Length: 540
Image 1: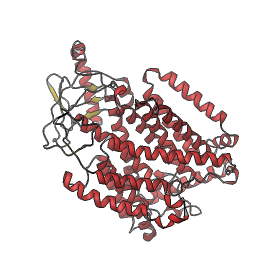
Image 2: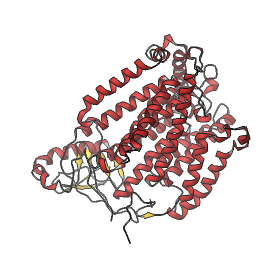
Image 3: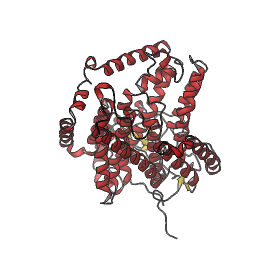
Image 4: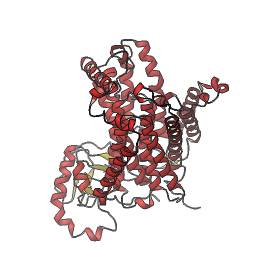
């Protein structure tokens, strides 16, 4: 019987059979990117080893603070270590019907078919019932396959803590009824679908299926926004902007543009990862169309988010020619502003001068008010969905971070930020580990694209109250799903080292670099330079 490849076939990982002591090897090397970023990572199988002493002298073996045992051949960076692990995770079929339910729910969530024709108006609750059906299939399937309700990567733990903060804020809210409504929709439904994504999306085909849906609605929204602008339905001076051909989570032009910001890096990642020469121009055209949609939306926050995403893509994809890449990005931005409509350029000019525009001035006042409310209610906030009660003219905060801080407390804001930052940090290791094999692997470019998308979202969401919307939970779900596929393929778990361990790792590298430099050529068949690639770890 032919052997199936664990990454390309429809299998899913379950918990490794035993929690064993982790042993691996360390080798001296340095990577300028790792040192600049001050990050270090470990590829590790389990978190359960008891703490031990810090790194010992590099001769022989050493242990870090987390109890990960290292010796003198494992790949390390100038600020940490990459630790191989065994045994590899096992695979098992399952969750097909859960994925079908998730896919149908997402289709209805994005495209809202009941808005297309009056005859479909009775289907307004279709998304709700599809979500209920998906959970009804997912929960018993998950219990049978893995013996638990969900896998527990750090992002799941963080989102559960965020749910706890929201629940605690409800009885303490200014208006508990309104707080319950905000918790019930869309927040808890977005969290539920995030957990389904983490557990169900475990093959590239499933991940790409959801990404294609997001790209498809992005193209529809972009075409609609450009058409509205072409027909003169946009009057920014009077506050009239594109409303989006699809309502719901895309009814607001800023939210519409934010979706386009996070989809452009994914389109570029798919473009670079595909081997199909016919698909490449399609992805490129999709990215260009979505840039046009951002311009037609007249969203300043989306413009800044697009700049941030482009900067991340340029920094990571142009490692060998960063100066040239950033020159090209600068030329692109100048051309974009020069060729854009005059009203768009005028709107961008108000970014640095809030007094020139009533909208910018209002946003500034709302930001100040939300910060004050958060300071006066630092523990539990005023209740989820209740900020508008104490706001200016019943307006929302227009800032995701102060939205969470004012409504659920400062601790909840920290959890929310960590929920977005943790997958970025872990995708970064996958990016470095797959650099040398990037031409034959989809993982590298998707990991870079997802990092740029998350950075773009973080910037854009500074100008929108979207902390409870589906967008960020789907995006983080994609990142976790990609990471779990990588971990299942390599039989490892991506775990960051602590700051203290990073300092110890640097000392270990410095002490060992002289002794191991002579062996580097002989070892190159087994280990690649960290910061470029991790060992090629495959399962048989």
